Image (cartoon, rainbow, N blue to C red; front, top):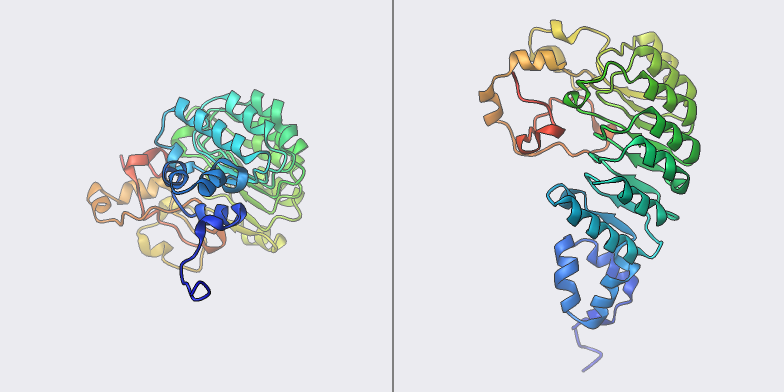
Length: 319
């Protein structure tokens, strides 16, 4: 009878297997529900088995800074040095990044969008982040060329960098060419680079293309000062460049001018603001464009998933 029994002894699974199963649950379920099921499940949650990859980006957008800091310290401590991936939004202070760096000996992916960290702390801890291959510092307003230079010098395994901004975050800046030149000078192994909406010039982009021979994808959407003609594109044929077209989008007369799904053309903000009224937004889908969407799948983006509850991270409202 015991051999024919169909009941599974879930409490007897090894902690590694439990960790793979629990990672599909929400953070709240893992921390509050799972430990109450049985002792073996509680032990698995308190150990490193569930925390080799920590993705609390969505949760962190809604919590208070002090709560986020305590949660980070608890989960990273539980990882016991086995942390490979960390995704968190709005890192509240420099001390938080220092704590992450103290436990980063196995860290490969670090995503810190919309964080308050500055150049100084990045310069101090960059040498402890040497194992990172993917770094996301999008919407980090206090970070600039000094931080990127420290990252480039110490993170020699870095192959993917996401440094995108929002137009409203750059109102007080005139140029970010210095950031682009630092990337070109210190990150030759980059394969994917996303610098959408940075205030950079064509010359800076050409410097990146010529200095990063392994580059496969370059995202310069919203970099309206960048003009890449067909000769330049053919010269770097191994790189897929996604960004503004080599024409003046402001002179377009309608949507049909950008309806070719095979192009990489994007509407400038001036054009969008002039052609779309508030009634348009009410009819739009609630599905938001995900940052993790494969860039290889992006060809024509009209940003048809505006989320005004998080307007800082999407297009601004039409004037």
